[in-house]
Length: 341
Image: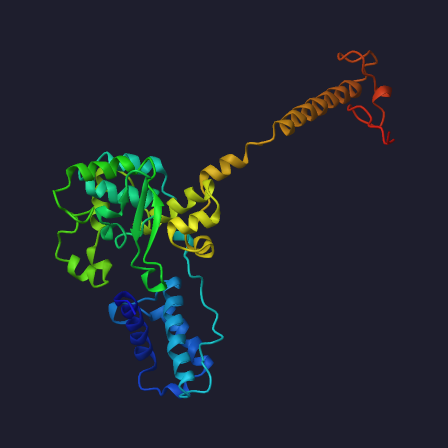
């Protein structure tokens, strides 16, 4: 079990102890599990302050609690898992999803003098790398300059027999990668060599990647550029990359490049953008547009004719060659023969 996973389990155990206290595990009922769920949502922060946890966090804590009781059931310590039938809240908070346009990133790059941080940002936004674990694990031997490919070490999926994946070095990423390479010290191993020079790197190498705290620096650059910050800064950069790639490549290709399944992409990353709405307003079939224009002209002509008739005029309407009797019940389009040849 990875250190970050152990930390999540410890949080769930702490919540169980805070709520159930000295209650024996074999007397916890399904009703108690439901009460525990409500407590997490209203008072689950406990020692960290008043208030409840976010729905997605509540769901994760309940999953861990259910795993603990499921293990107790396998060990014959309890007959049933009281958390087994519990309905979990959504794992993703859609209200915190934001699509970050490429234009925003390009404007942000203008105020970032550090080439390594610029590279970190474009790898997150265009390649969908998980920050900080994946970019901070990249070494120069991961780069295949000739074929334009990058081998990305993936600490998150390493325990699932997927220690790395290979992604294309997209055109918007390559210039920044080359700039860092040109400025790199002779014999340096890691691509983000200078960014790794911090005390928190020791904790990160043990699996506590969150200790690097790259949020503050990005927030400072956003303020300098006059760009409002978006929720979940780095997660939404990865989600924006996934959304863009999904428009261009099949799902199985995106899954291989991003290191997650299509189901995970749908649940946690893919977003509906303004470009989707704008594209929906444009009919891709030119023949449909011609038919629409023809129908519009016919409807407009019919309206003019009706208005002319209602005014009591008996003269031939201004569009010569069409009379009321000629139109009949078939409208202005020519009748279509139903006979087969």
